[in-house]
Length: 309
Ligand SMILES: Cc1cc2nc3c(=O)[nH]c(=O)nc-3n(C[C@H](O)[C@H](O)[C@H](O)COP(=O)(O)OP(=O)(O)OC[C@H]3O[C@@H](n4cnc5c(N)ncnc54)[C@H](O)[C@@H]3O)c2cc1C
Image 1 (spheres, rainbow, N blue to C red):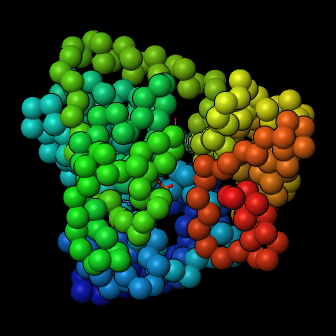
Image 2 (cartoon, rainbow, N blue to C red):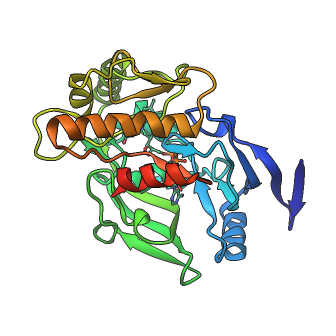
Image 3 (cartoon, rainbow, N blue to C red):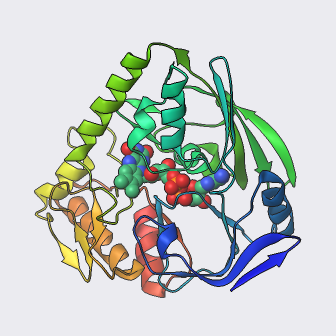
């Protein structure tokens, strides 16, 4: 049911299948869709003590099949962007693929790697998303952030963001990114277009597209290891391994796809098997990239604790 509070739209018992790229069936008790950053800040102030959860494009989340009790706020409508010379400032909900195309139009280089990543800018900064040897931190200048603890807006520069491989300060503190500023490089459109095309071709056979619902790479590549997470999983004989409707993708073992009616429980069981078999064979503990959101059973909690330690 659609409702309105101070003119901010929200829904009770909202179906989330179309708000996560894994297409897990889940329900949010309260789902908010703010139209602008003013509405988002109003919601953050209102819910600062109730653990509000922000989602962007839902391409790195595992929603619980048992549902989500915390207020869930979707940023997809907060997506304006301003370009001045080679500086681009964009709001959290814009899709990074849109930013990549906009940079191409403006003859600005630095966002070519974003063309195949189905993320919002907020989610990409949270994860320090990266591909093809580049990451969101490379051209980052600063961000406007809402600090839920101090209940105010702060500005953080790149050096304050604690960026590293798939990590930023947004994972450490109760910070919500409102917008971010980047410095790109003027160059020719042909050069940018050719890099983007290369990146798209590279992905074609190495990643499932969204017609096979998935949430990108399951595990980070382990440090100081010659083999990638996918290669380690493959060597454990898990190509095509399946529980329920959750399957290790046949073409690349660091992806897990939803073949129809996947549940979060089956997803955790599959990735726990991947983790356990790699640990047993290689004594390497893989770390999942995905973020779990919502209720968990006791056994899910136990497995997740081991996976995330
Ligand atoms: C087909 C496919 C390909 C992919 N390829 C890549 C790749 O090449 N490289 C890569 O790094 N990732 C890749 N991913 C994973 C995913 O796209 C990234 O992790 C991305 O950064 C997630 O962004 P999102 O907007 O979807 O975030 P969501 O999944 O919506 O959220 C992820 C986390 O970010 C938090 N978050 C979202 N917005 C904000 C905000 N405004 N402020 C604070 N926290 C916020 C959420 O609370 C959550 O904890 C891929 C995924 C898929 C499905």
